Amino acid sequence: MGKKNRKVKYDVVETLRFKSFPPEYEELTKNLYTKACKGSEHLWNQINTVDDLRNNKELKDDFYTSANKGMKSAQDEIVSIVQSKDKLDFSKELLLRGIADAIAWQLLGHQLCHARRFFKSIKQPDLYNCNFDSVVFAAKDNDEKKPSSISLISDLTSFIQVGDLLICDPKKGITIAEVKEGVMNAKIGDFMKFYMESQCDRALYYFAEKEGDKAVKQLQRMFRQASRMSHVSTVMSTGQGVDPDTKETINIPEPFFEIESWDDRLVNTLNEADKKGWAIDVIDNCVFLGVYASEEARMGGHIIFNSWFDNSGGTPECPRALLIDSMRNPLALPVFSRNLPDNHKFDVLFGRKQVCMAICIESLLKECEKVGLSVRFATNKERGRLDKTGNRPYKHKGKAIFIGNGKTEVVLMDGIFLRVMHHGQSPISLIKMMIDGMDKTT
Image (cartoon, rainbow, N blue to C red):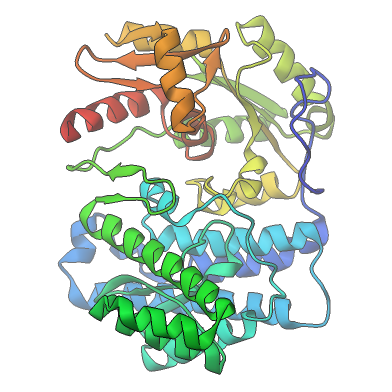
């Protein structure tokens, strides 16, 4: 896969064109995937329900110990590759980050609501930054002191942008750690801890006067990071908080709402493509799916898919994506984390299968109405209010769309399409859950 392209207008020949990773990386990727995602595989046949794990202490301890051991082994190998003399090319780095992301998603329970709190929409630090070796040392030191835990290095992932380490201990849950090196950083860190406890403005004045502007700016950066870490920890433990960067109020509703998945339909379509070279399906009468497995189908299947979708009500503005695109979207589940057989995962990654997806907006809105939801375009006043918030709703025929249940409404956002295509969530089930969740918090 090449470097990220700029967004271009829809073209039946170019849109969804075939992509794959270089075949020379497949063996390495399979090895890392097995360690990162299947460390506890030998115990899976003993676990039929969550209660089996929850109520059997010995099985639970063995499960977490095995899983964490595998994840740590995968991370150690990735670190070794990064610290070698050979600089990573774009494709290899993307695969390595995908493995690290798969670890992170496991630690976060595959919950997008939590993953979003860690993502700040900024570019991840270069893996060759000067602080990387210190963070690696801290991760290994923590794992040696607490063998049952795992310390995931944030910079290895594509979306963990709060804290240097994401630490998961089976007994204590998730914590976030910041690694500071150097005498001055230690001094600033000690003062910040003192100030946060004392709130002594006179001490802050003397610190600034003695240490100078550079130290003050570093103190401000450390305060912001501490605020972000505190916010993420609070949201994950309570489900509520205010984002210190965006000032957005966060409410994760209780109880947990289960969203229907269409991964089984995807697996069936992938299996069918193995038999005849290609296969198609439509989920909820609005999510179009095409799988192309034969050599001829892989190269031209996207053109056939685009034409089929266009003739079925799709417009140039309708969301379209390849399954492999999830490897480049920070908040998408990487292919490693989808509920698919391993052979299909690696067929998709290394070019033996091409999976095209698209969502027909007109059909989606009709399906919402069929299940009793209301659908309407935003008024000019509502559109102006949305624009002021900085949020960018999806616009159909140039207008934002509200979907509601008579009591509560949600505006159709691009994030819904991310969850449908790259988290395998049923669009109707998802939209109903979002509206019901808002009912619980209002």
